[in-house]
Length: 322
Image (cartoon, rainbow, N blue to C red; front, side, top):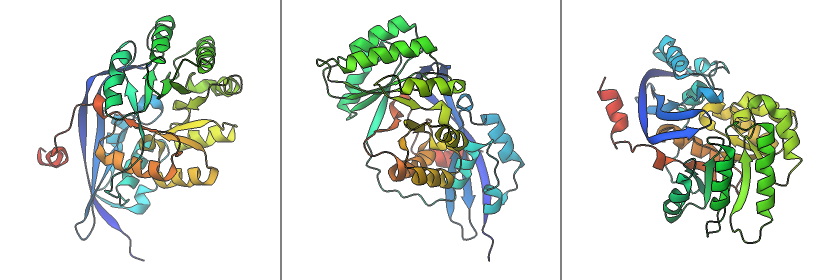
């Protein structure tokens, strides 16, 4: 059997946010990543993307660069599929470059990410006019009393939309209870047209048991995000009894083929989500979302408005400027 080989090159990139993205982890100003380029023996070129988020549990950008640096310039599939689980963003990027991704438009509903704090009250209307009907709002960024006041205004916007609350693991147990109590109470208010879809990752990854207990204590739904960042974590949480929503960020989950196998086997309730990757990684992530995401839930890729627009020749320029 012929061994397939690929000429391998890579370039790193930086992409600015329009304004710093504020989360429980702090302010994120620049998205850094790596673009991979494979060329097969007949000259066909394909691309992959490594877009780590180290605070979510993936490798760091420095570790990803070091891994790429030590690789030979000619790769086989055997080398690619031997990438260790400690490098999940690299696993995604290298296997992505092997996959043939369709250019057809993906017809999936997206949720739009709102800015933290009071700015959300001004931003939702523009996103609504652009066609978004599901919104995600970051919490655990400011004082809880202030956020709850904004939340009570946000759920009274006069449209029928869905709202997701994302704490990024930044709440204490008592704060998580307060948010869930508030959500339960507002869900029963007939004057509110907003549907509170779920509270995302209220507690730290180390507090899985507490989140499992909270998921059985309230009517409001909890989704796991940081707790299931990689395929290994996803498998562990499923084995420990989680049957709620799983937020999947394909670009840091690991090998796409293994993720696909797990989701198809267990038919879990999923929301596929962005890590602010470029169109290279996004194409593969959307392909997976089309196959595997729960059809009644909007995917989390409504983030383009938060990043500076890329020049149409950015990929070509990435190679020509070296």
